[in-house]
Image (tube, rainbow, N blue to C red):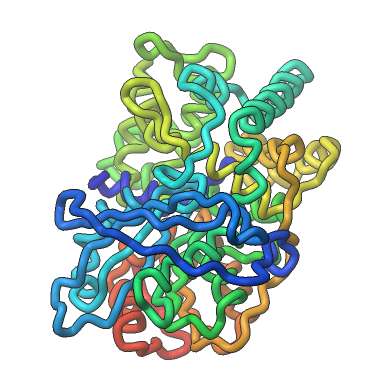
Length: 490
């Protein structure tokens, strides 16, 4: 993926199931005797990249038991004489492929690449690393198209049944692996990756969910840290439904920013005839009653909402929102469906990448959720107040984990981090997916951390602010931290 909107997708914290959080100190997989990392044999895999696979224990309590392969990619340092080591990167999710991310992102990291091998990997359960797969293409089509605005008993029961069936399908195909896909497991994998790379200490660049992975790594391996740059920070102390509500608020703010722009700009076609907010609400109401035919498929309200959501991750994607809504208002749902398919990682042949399955598997392990449906019923007023559009759509999003076969191992509390060098945190004031308050909270939780603020809309800062980009590079390369209180603009 090389387009701007494609790159943004690789950094997402997926709203439908929120962010991944948990507490590594309560997880099941404490390793009594860390395994010796295997060897990495790199082979050319095109475009200046090299690929390899590292064998790691499936269950870290049984380090000599079954292993799984973690797929890696690297782009060797372009100035070998000035090489510092490797910088390991995670794009977020959970569920995003680090391999695909680095192929699209490496060209934007020339300063880092001069001094470091750029390295990323598909975390366990994702992409090429023992992938979890639950549904076939047609089944996933049906699951993602299902209306999640549960405004009548029939829709509510259909959604609950779909979540139960989805969890059962995942268990039937992956029962041996599901208990061992937590972020703590991934952090332990990452330490073996560090050692296999030959780096005494880890240099790490994590986005979105990858900031949560970075915090867990710092908790488990504080003396193995050289530098951690955490961009778009997840707060592990926020509960599942509170985190989801914060994201609803954030996406509504970014939607409102686009609506205000559309009302005032002659370049926004959707605002030329009628108020764009009223038109958007009316469109979703129509799609709820009568999905729009697009070839041999239908654009349902759920898919149209997904198409809207994806464009709010980055302000440069607002043009696609204008195009999609303008076309849909004329009866053409192709653009919104393309955007939804892109977000959902649907392939042209109707199959899917396994992002949804991997995300759910990791999230449900990391994060406990209320077990009674009545807890989700009670969210209605606060979610609708936060966003009449996104609130009802996401109110029941965490219900899937009630039925998940592998029980959670995490808790909602700060992750203790002591004994590391200073950690750099980057937060955007109007970041919809990882609200700025989370960056501020983690800054208070991690003693000695430094918070860099970016003013502006959109998710994460490295590729939306030259100032933030330069500050993160300077820290990772020279260990030079920005002054406390530094503010960048988009």
